[in-house]
Amino acid sequence: MAVHGYEAVRSFCDHPQMSRNPLHAATYDADRAAERLERWPLLEGSLTSGLERGEEGLSLMRELLAPDFRPAMIRKMAATVQDVVAKVLALIQFERELDLVRLVREVPLIVITKLLGLDEATEDSELFLNAAPDYFRGINPIVPDDARDRAELAARRMTGVLERAVENRRARPRTDMVSQVLEIADGIDDATTEDVIRALVILVAAGTDTTRLTSSLAVKTLLNHPEEFERLRADRSLVKNAVMELLRYESPTKFLVRIAMDDVEWEGQTIRKGSLVLLSIFGAGWDPRVFAEPERFDVRRDLKGSLSFGFGSGYCLGVHLARLQVGEILGFYLDHLPSTATLDPSRITWDPMNLMLREVTSLPVRIR
Image (cartoon, rainbow, N blue to C red; front, top):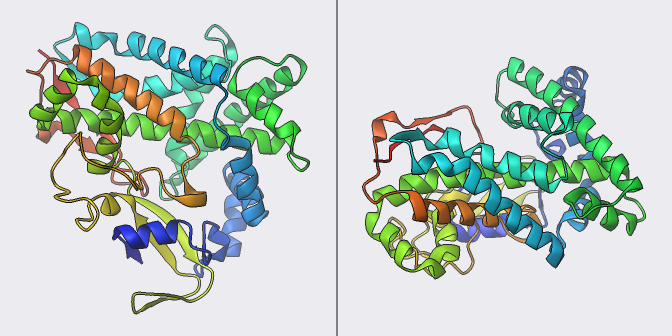
């Protein structure tokens, strides 16, 4: 079942009879799950280990990651993001044409390695940067098995890097994300090293995909709405709100998934126990009952109540980092992407195999 209306999406994001645990689905096949676990123990095992603890496991992840970053960490994050954006996107200032998807995708991964405290010159930093793209492509539930095989290998490498980082920070704490999550975990009786690593992987994923896709789709939206692009250039105070409007207008998220744990009545319909419910974040952002004239891109729009990062206990754990990165990238576009830049819609390509995200794979822009 697909749900598109704002109120339904908002309600089901955090509905007491809706679960994020696929083990509750009527279509769950225990035999097939066992086969998958044998072939992809890290990919499947990391999912199963968290789900077996149910809502308690989800609450633990939120406890590890939900607290606002301390001021020192916020300052470090901002400085790191600014530095990486300036270096990675520098080509915009000189090239005539660039594929901005390929250019932007490096930003969140480099940012994450720095925030995790993985020094650029180390082997672990290189391992992490090289493994992460295969990992994120492979966790999509409908990718071919060979992509899952590559993702399993990537997960092994990434886990090894994070295990070494956690061990190192326990002995020698620093002012990075690993140290901060470890400090929080030390105050939680049931938190294990595996929980810390899983929390870090969630943070990496949340701070990577939203940034990469939103920043790419932002160029498409802004170049198609030159008046709003120029409005932002003239008034940078609108950038923070513009990030949320970009997320609403061209959401990188197709669906969030929930499973009915019991029969659920909604607006005269019965959602049967075990049914999959796809919550359309994109659809909720285009509900005219909440956002007037949703087809109009407006950087001054009132976005109170936006569901772009989810709602309630399903609120995105990487929201702070994602918004910071997208805002910095948008600022760089405003500084260095000329008003005369153009894109050819016929050359934009997408990945139809990504079930949950609107995966734009190529976005060539003629800059000058």
